[in-house]
Length: 282
Length: 293
Image 1: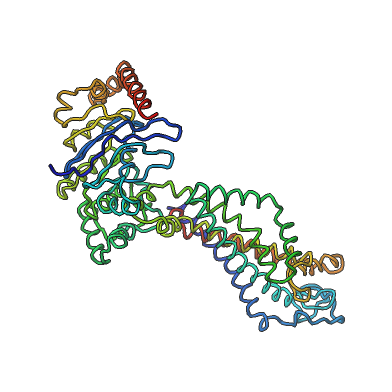
Image 2: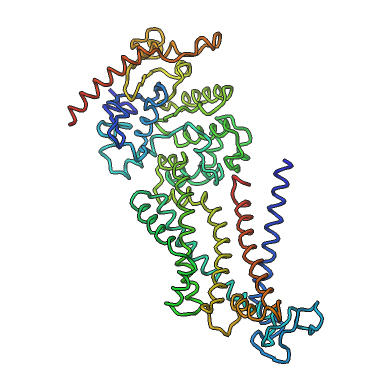
């Protein structure tokens, strides 16, 4: 009793902390024009490399300082979140749907369907994912939709493998046989009996995939292969900050902290949701 | 003569490597009758149940024989028709109540689903029916149980739920596959009594699969003894216990442990009997193989 109480309190704290950061960051990104203190693209060479507010020499109104072109870091981080979260939600949902459907088919139908899908997954996973993404974007051309497509193409295998394995576990349970004896059709059994048992894992994976999508977008923009170079992204900010690390560490450090917290929050949020929604773990 | 509820004749099944797991099994269960199917583990008892209900694992293939349920030959029906017939007339009380309920769905929706979605009952009627059955299997506070997830119930409670579910649609035949094996001894007795009671009230035919001869004496009228997928003896319960015909049946009875002397009586089936059986089966297999190429 005591143990379960403590573990659910821990789950709760994890869920709230991670969820809190995500809500804050996502709201800021959505409301960027209203909450960002400055125009993220406005350059002012008089204000270049201002330090964050607690360091001597900072300028009021530029909370996290400015980069080497005098652009406000906080505003750029907020606007950068727009790209990051768009990619996170659209791309991760895309991989989730494609990967889960194929995983369910492979795990439930078995036989030749499983063999074909599993071989494709094996081949797919032999490619180094980031390199694969870079090549894909290079071929498709830069832009938000290319980044999303690249992510879906490289990441569906994660869902497919996990969902296939979980589905295979469930298919051998007696309750599936019972549903067959009762006379339910295969599709009915898959959707109403098997899927609810696989869903907690899908939800956890979805959240983790969102975190990975944020990283992949950052990597692509770090190597200048994401969206147009004008719009701020966390990856391009890290790339720029790297050049001035000795003069202005904050230009590099703040986007990295933002990226780190966001990715961590996505994965912790996913785990917390799984613990909450899985009736057996609960 | 009225067609029996379940009529299995000459049923043989093999594994992918050609090994026979069922050897020309014939067996009938008359309407309203309880027939026990007894054998050691691995004798193929569960396979017979699965073959009747159409849920054999893909590695097992039926190679010959006929199964008819309520006079309809299952093998001659299209698969969707067969599913419908089995769903309407048969049900299973499974061996392991832990995995036989869907862990992520509430008891209530699992139990009513079949009545509403397959048999077309309206929700209120299905709900009343389920509550009445939960009452019959002595579940107090059915409204609370209906809202539970399976893991919130004990093994005995889950087995009661499964028994209620099996009787819910008034099937003609229930296959009870070692329904008490996974439960502890005190609960076993209650569950057994419950099945016997519901069987009498509803007049359902039951094929009762077990390895426990003590259970056989309590619940059934007819017995079929199975060894290595082959029927070795078939008799009325009284006749079987007073005068077992086949040496294996006698050996099996001698091997039943007794409470008065648990250690000395706990001995395996006599080796010489098993050797005799093995020879009998090998001869039968040779004959079968030459007949089937």
